[in-house]
Length: 384
Image (cartoon, rainbow, N blue to C red; front, side):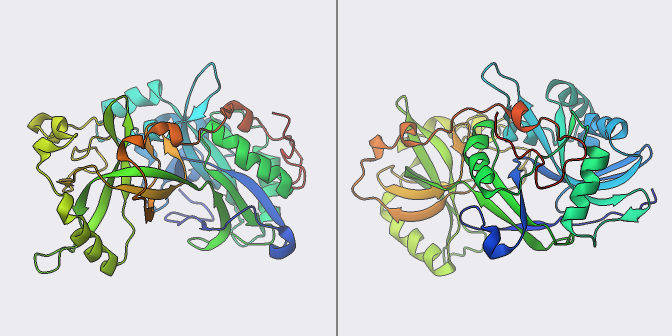
């Protein structure tokens, strides 16, 4: 492989902001949907294709169908930045499925081949690092986007070119609408900025919500010692049909707060036999690999080798947490501790309190970009 930009390359990153940024404050911006998948840099030199992750690890072997799509659809020699995704197909509209995408990282070649057929991935391209013998890394985004639309504008799947707009009002509509298709929010990029590997020159706007959850247990921090025990994470639950469902964790605390919380929760410590999760405490559960219900203490291919044991707590305390989105029956990311809710009854903390985004068809988000359109009008319409 011989390209003007060669791996390893770290992708450009984004910093979180509240609300869709105003171009009057930040200068000329282009807005894109924020995809919920695996960040992926694609290097193509003829039939040679390499896929690398955000931390430069190889992804090529896990997505053979994407490699073939890149060979068939992308220009002969190019380097692009994008996102790998898997979508569910439904009469109510297609939707991104991050959990299914996670299952694609599997050590067995036979399993990789099977999953490439049963849950095929797609690629959304949103930036250009090189085309032919030319590097675009130092060129402003407006030039990179124009080159993308000229050379990638007819992509119709499984490789796609992301849609963009320069209208903040349209970006606001996308922020609300596209969540129903499983997207994460909106990205804003300065039109005059070069591609900055590992630099946080983009801005991301993500959904932010709160929920009242039951504190069901905790894990100790990896630096915890008998002399100074520290809390690592709180295990959270919600009630559904008479069962306390494990819904995620809260884990971001200062060292002082970790010590305080561990001491504060000691009166609630109980034996697992007295806990609603006692049915999950057997040896078969502890060794389970498949974990569709996110049973606490069980392994997944993402946690193999980690100590997932936890200290059960009587489910008597309610905590308000901040979260961005749900993935099935659990929080998509780590929830953030907000405040204790002594006024709430734990049994009243169920899924019905959670906001459900209106369903939106992913196929609408993925439709092609008109060839020759510039960033001022590229996919700026919102007629569905």
